[in-house]
Image (cartoon, rainbow, N blue to C red; front, top):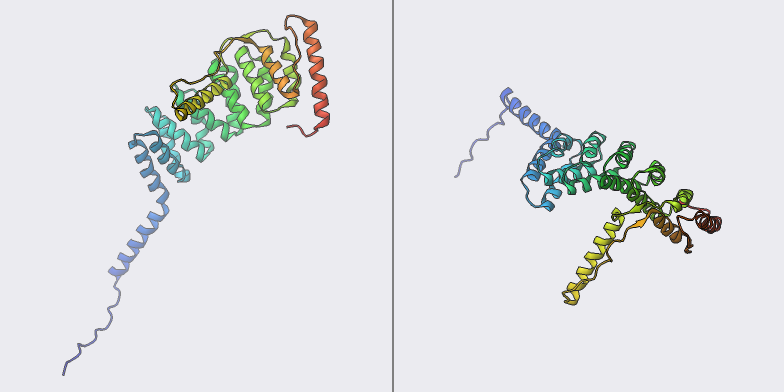
Length: 298
């Protein structure tokens, strides 16, 4: 007959056991508390190691998802020597939207790399805080012409009330005809009929815009891309493109805006005060009629 092994009484947990359990529990709690920091460190490492821009952007967005744990890493990445890393950091900072990073984003708007600058202006437009709006205003009036136009676009995209006030001031006061024309285009596209008096006042601005505005450059780029895509579909070697830019006075941009708003073109000569005043009066009448017909203007 088979004998059963005698049952053993359960061993009691000793102080050594409790100490081990407490150590494991403490380690788990530490890992839990610092999980975002550890993930942020890993994502930063992967971003720096990545080569392709899309990979860097992906790791940057994952880094931003770590919340405030990402801030120390983004501070250094925004000042990295590699422009590809700086650009990925800009996109991450835009997603994170922490006020501590805004000064570094503003600094990247003056970056020596064009792609980093473009990403920074886009980020600042989307953040649209009082700090970034003030910075864009400073760049609009104090930076070089290309940066000023990007700042104007960023202000328009932010859609803050202060931004439109600044663009109306630029339309009247900016020393660059090209930037004044850019302000008119942005105001016209946004249907800011409240700025009509400023646009009307520009009908005697005969200063020549000798290079395309940023809006025109973007339109040209979009048209060229569409042309290339259509040509590929048709198997055609040739591709159509927009006409070569023709220098025009600022008053022509104002006339384009007023024509867009009213659907009516009025002939005038910016050198002839009488025809300018006639055009102003006609367009003002048309705008007043439109405003009274649709009281809810932007």
